[in-house]
Image (cartoon, rainbow, N blue to C red; front, top):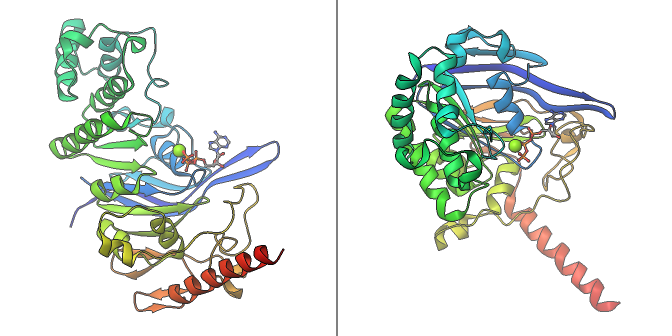
Length: 349
Ligand SMILES: Nc1ncnc2c1ncn2[C@@H]1O[C@H](COP(=O)(O)OP(=O)(O)OP(=O)(O)O)[C@@H](O)[C@H]1O
Ligand SMILES: [Mg+2]
């Protein structure tokens, strides 16, 4: 059984704004193991990037604990020990935005090596950067002395990755690392990331909207909604036998590759828009969009509970793998009848 690298307990991150408080992370508890790809999915605004940034120390937590190999890191980056800062890094969605346009690739990738005293002088730095560029499949001869504005999107992201792995970290947050890239280079960047994880035994917090990609790369997956985790499970369990209605809704909109998979897919839709993180619904925060909601869902917030080994679900209607109090087929039928009714009304008018 793999050791825990990161342990997060009752973590909250609230942003106080003029218009009110945004509960971007509202009490999440989870672990990331050594050498594990932990995937995080959820709609826009659910708190995924904030989770990555709080782990990295970019934002201090409002409440809760974060530990890294049993060292408390529940503080912003500036208060963390240098050895820990060296051991974790992040790759952002927008590759250009995170690279200093006035610096060369050599200086950008070499900077963390200098900050952490890992090289002795410019020559040694250049040697290290040369190797790092090779690792991310950029020809050092061609790229070392270029600046970000002379690079394509995929090349910029490769530079950001080289910088992120320069100090040989144990943990990297990948926040939608390929979503801003052309489809043709997405696969190349993903392959580099997969190879690196394998080669350097890193753990990733991998954030993406792309469920197909998630299925291919994550060992475990968590689904987030308005600051909370709704379901956490091993990837194959998450994709093959999800239990939370929200997971089912989200997977329902996910394109399948075979007819068998298509048949198994529930035909459900979450109704309406995602509510504001500043004005959360009562009880279960998903109840306003849940096709199965009952009275109790409006009243109390469900906790994330382990319904079978390593499979956690936060839903009043899920008590266990064989104890699910909602009926997908019944609701699918109701939805069909509802659509039929609407068509009937339109025809009459
Ligand atoms: N620095 C900030 N100040 C105020 N509110 C913030 C800040 N950062 C994030 N938020 C808010 O916190 C909530 C979660 O945002 P976050 O960026 O973590 O979502 P996300 O799941 O990464 O979304 P996306 O898929 O669009 O990237 C949103 O309501 C967002 O507006
Ligand atoms: Mg985000």
